[in-house]
Image (cartoon, rainbow over the protein chains, first blue to last red):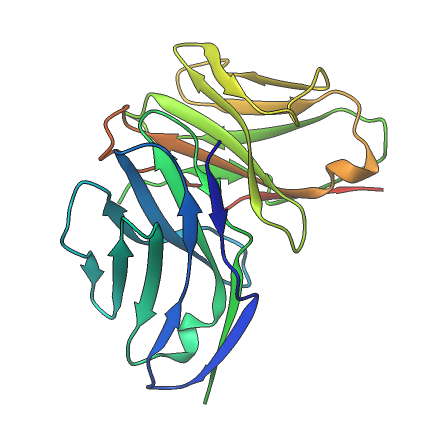
Length: 113
Length: 115
């Protein structure tokens, strides 16, 4: 079974700075997807970014980028120019084709003014 | 942009009562999911549904739970006899197809409180 580990339960960063959230996973699959979801205090799950395992190029979405290390089974999220609205829980998730999402425990990020 | 909707946003019920949580997936999506998040914990998979059948279910999804797509738009989760430990946020998600490129889109969630 796949597992997703987020070892940092909580982080804080100053506004405008850069922060990196870590995630590792365990799978024997070769083809899969990885995701970062953001959950603000409203508790809605918002997709931030996704990465296809077969792609070597790291995904980017505006201020959000990932560092995907397939051999190390590592998938970190970098948030550049942090904004107050980035304050939220962040969940790393794994999905192999046609199946459910498997989530990590989440990490609480606080952006301080 | 199309979105998944869920009603109600908050449901309060007494232990032992039946509740039905409703979801309207994105209209052309074919695969539907329910997830649960107990406060302060991670999001957990409950069940997936395709072609009017359950595709997969977790250990959490016992006989007290059922899902249904009663018409062409709604997707419901029923809990027959609620327990205190069913208190959680319940998320519905839908997906276009089974391609790895098909993302699951989440609804805003229903907060269930069992007293």
